[in-house]
Length: 326
Length: 133
Image 1: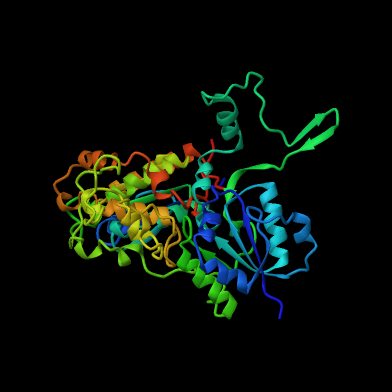
Image 2 (image 1 turned 45 degrees about the vertical axis):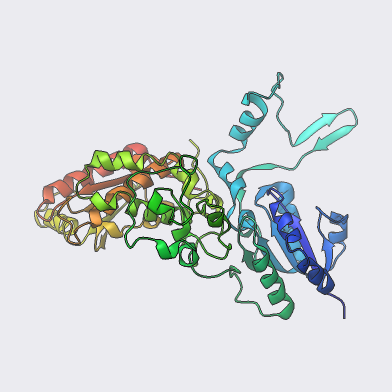
């Protein structure tokens, strides 16, 4: 029997998701034994035309990482959708928008102006910015369109499953691959990770005090956190309460607070709104009746960039999706 | 003319009573204030506020009991912190802070309710509709 065909593709991403595949270590041998990798630009020399030559649905599953930022990315994922039985959004950027999604605080014009004109290290006396069409003596050159707004994969094509994380951990990748090979998949649209919140599985959870109250907000660089204590107890904002578990607590174990890369749990619509709600509720809660409105505001003002913090990984998938440009 | 819609979350114990008082006293307040009764201002999740804006409201009004008067003792303190942090966040996302207003209206304060409602409607009129893509 022919082995099922698998494709990997990347869009607006950092390459960490490709590394995550390599991080399967010896397990990757089991994967290649069971499947044929027919497309993987970072590692194998197949071209777009090879994918175009395949029949519709011929690829059993495509794992697609990265957010959608350009016309080219949109075209490629639409092609892969047509040729694939299953599409798995692989990693935070394709699932939620991820770090590239923070570009939604700007638009094409403001990004181009900054990157090509005003960055101190840029010398561009003629103010040249990328054009979609450029005429040169040899003919017309074209570039794909750079969109104003970064989108998630499921805002561009129909997605069957999500593998969350920046990057997805090897155990979840293996579980997903095994489930696909054995045909034991959950209902369409499922996030292939546990349903609990990170606090539920956090190794520091047991020592967490009954009542959390933050008197002063600390940023991670300001103190060396106690490796045993709940970050919130120390005044460091951690998004564990509003983030899905399954990451293996990699950041927590490296003594860094959660920033939400796994996205919200199933019930939550907007991870950032939930995050700010959870954090606001415990700020100064111990003395809340005694604090004046001014005291309260002063405490909250210690959060210098709330939108960037609470929507760090999820801005394109949030209710507002992006900044409203004036 | 299309008046801007203002979704208003009123706590059951103080502010909703206050709005009722305003109605009973036949005080004028704009019809575009759409009231949603909630048990406590502390129940108003920022998600609800953003969803209201997303679905076409020009502004969101959250009214609760005066500090110290919360039926659940401390719900309005949470509302205060959530609203302030939400407004800061929305501002970064290009949404004017005035579009979300948290205030306190006691059960007997019908006039205060009408005043806040009128002010909010005026502010929204000046800001214009919130056109979200």
